[in-house]
Amino acid sequence: MTDLAIAANGLRKSYGDKTVLDGIDLAVAEGTVFALLGPNGAGKTTAVKILSTLITADAGRARVGGHDLTADPQAVRAGIGVTGQFSAVDGLITGEENMLLMADLHHLPKPEGRRVAAELLERFDLTAAAKKPASTYSGGMKRRLDI
Image (cartoon, rainbow, N blue to C red; front, side):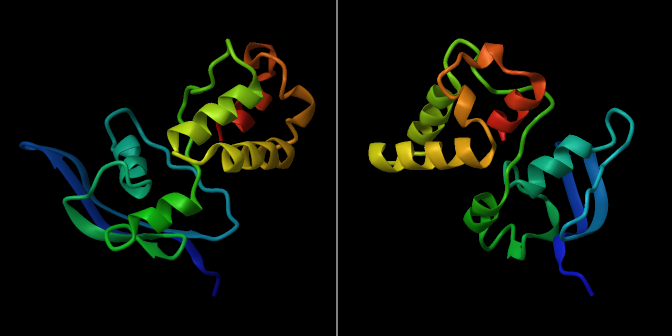
């Protein structure tokens, strides 16, 4: 059997008396493309926020990348990348400057931040555009930079 990238059982979340997620179960195999679809208010964003450790579930259990959300949230964060519907890229600065800003926000030492930024720009095929303002990037380039 294929290992699971995401395994969730009975995830629940409420805000006061408003239940926003009511017992979701997910099993997503590694290496698959998975879409979480539903109408507004169905709990999609809440589920993603829980699975990416931005908020905690009120009930249920989940593992992402083999790591328990509750027991080892840092390992979950280290193993995933999450991008929202709208890009967090600053178009007024270069792609490289966007990467260095993120390195600073993650408290990486300057030399390590420069190394990681260069590696990621290369990995996502953005090296040639690294010194250009992000506002000049195509939509796909901005998405890769955002990730």
